[in-house]
Amino acid sequence: METTMRTAMRAARVSIFVNILLSAFKLAAGILGNSAAMISDAVHSITDLISTVVVIIGIRLSGKAADKDHPYGHERFECIATLVLVALVTYVGVGIGWSGLQTVWEAFSARGTGEFYLPIPGLIALIAAAISIVVKEGLFWYVRAAARKIDSQALMADAWHSRADGLSSIGSFIGIGGAMLGFPIMDAVAALIICLFIFKTAFQIAIDAINKLTDKAADDETQEAMRTVITTHPQVQGIDRLDTRLFGNKIFVEADIQLEGTLLLSEAHAIAEEVHDQIEAAFPKVKHCMVHVNPARPPGEPHEPSEA
Image (cartoon, rainbow, N blue to C red):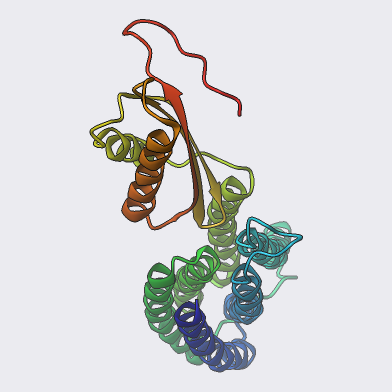
């Protein structure tokens, strides 16, 4: 756990440092370069700072050991932190989208009247967009590697937030470039497109977090692999039930296995312990595994899984 926290904190510090510098640069470039797209992009980068703080809090809370009030641990706090991050990102996306939509509508309403003027962005805004694309993509790969190393959903969400910011900078680059070529409305359109990227990323992250908060089963491939591990034990004659549920980034497993009915209780218990250890050894994400023993039935005879 100590190694996990060190890795997470190191990635978080790098993310915070990069986003402080990049946000300040993009905001200044957006203001000096008269670019709504770049200002929106800067605001998106500022949310990366907030999201990283949320991630740090989530990882610290989820890493706490089980206690009297939370006997199964605190892993789900990371999912909650992820959803808070999603809410922040969505809020920013709505603001950016609404601003872009207003500008586009005003330009459309005033077409041909000469009553609506959109400033042409300066070169500095275009340069800022190009730099942002490169920096954000690099930050995405760095944070994603750290998230995979410690298997952190919240840190992975933060990585994808950086990727979304990079994608929004691509939109800014195209919009600013188009405006500089004589199509000033492209800058506002780019800001509108940016919000769509933000919504898409937020939705994907939210679905993953919700699945882990609502006891969704592990994927079919993982369950089938677990069945294979269980049935490789020479004394296991069958599996009556195998249930799994996601708990944060961990998996809880309950299995009912069939053993020879004439075995002594101590022998059956020992086999169940062996199966338990095999599952946890083969699947590091398994935090809790309960193996229940049923007497084997003749082929074709149904067996009702025990509720005990």
